[in-house]
Image 1: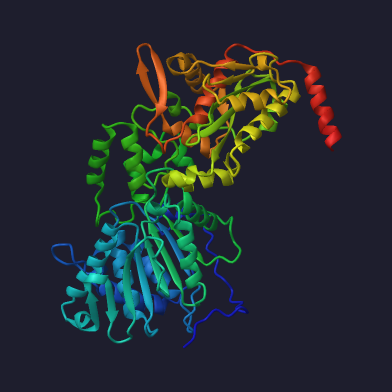
Image 2: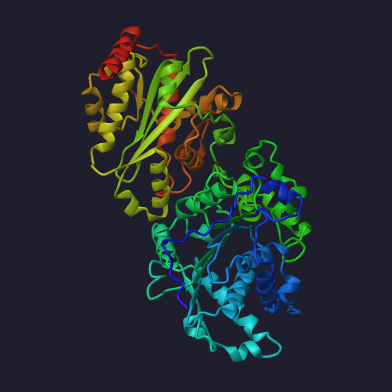
Length: 578
């Protein structure tokens, strides 16, 4: 039977929007809408799944006894969405579930169930783990389920090849192959079903998006193709392929993405407002059952509370990591030990209105700060504005990076590509592109008349000479540039930024790139002073933050804009351009 995709297929797609998903969690229901599944097929698939035994628990319970309702909902949705011709109304599932909810064990049971129910001769099913260890664990779970069949039926039906991680069905010749995620995962494979385990660990892999496209390319040719992604939240701010998949799933769930959707999102997480609330309602154990669907089975509330209390004594970074892994609380700022104190007040200082145009519109003076520019660094630039009416300070940053850094630092390459898509980072294709575009930025500000005549742009004294030449070559006088002492001499600016963040008089534009850099900043005491350094060499960049401190240093001198004449010239130039 051929199941190739028909280009004229106009089957009505199901709606997976579920705007009341959190209310459903509070009511003890799964966080996705009721679907028009075929109940008979759903129960048939579930019966197979529930007969399998969990091999690594003393009394070897069946999955029917041990498995939480949350995963049974996934099994029912998969089998109940198959039409009589084998086509699927759900061709993808993205599930976000915390650690200790038996994801890998249940996923192994699902894979074996799909193999047992499969009727396609010589079909290939892939289970892909992010690491060799996770892939091996999954394989051993599936093999254990086969060996624990008391009637011996599964041992007779399946041929297990340990050395190549393949389990073959002797009846249909179909097989499950367990693989580790890499560039060659699709080499020689033509699967009809793929399960990706712990997708979050693939987020920083530079080729992850390409491999996932290959997987989708193989599956989209078949109407019976199925891709299942089951993962925990990342212990770092989401990036790369994981970030893209997570944001797409949320968009479908929230009803923002509705066209040609065949992905069912199943996300056990708190609403964003609970995650960013200063009162941290997610820390209340009474809320944990909402996002721990296997509670009472593979994990227990009293043990989780004890585990959390142990991590809490280690500080904010340990709490953040624990919450990301067990409660799916998304990491924003990396609240590591020794962090810059301003990071504690950074999230509530976000103001989405802030853009460069907004600064020009509402501020009576603008100053600039620059830092970095080495071939292995970001070139960071900050424009700091003082609001005419309220005297608040508004922080806007941008950065540039040479394209070869993406090859030198593959662990952060995907994150940089995300920042480039946001518009906060420019990946330079030409060696001089960063310096030229930075000079363009300050030339624009100079033309507004809002930059001070003298001492309006703060630079690291070690700044590249070509940068100074490029800026002054745009008609900006040398007097407008001033060296800002670094190291412990920058303490006054660091403390000023901390205080103004705390009292609410310093706002920033909530750039993901800048937020990441703030999270990378490590404070070190130097006598009575403080020095900001990176928390990790190489992969942790802080240049845009330092450029902000340079700008704060300039703004702390209470500068005055060079005058209305410059502003008049600026608006005349805009009128002429129009």
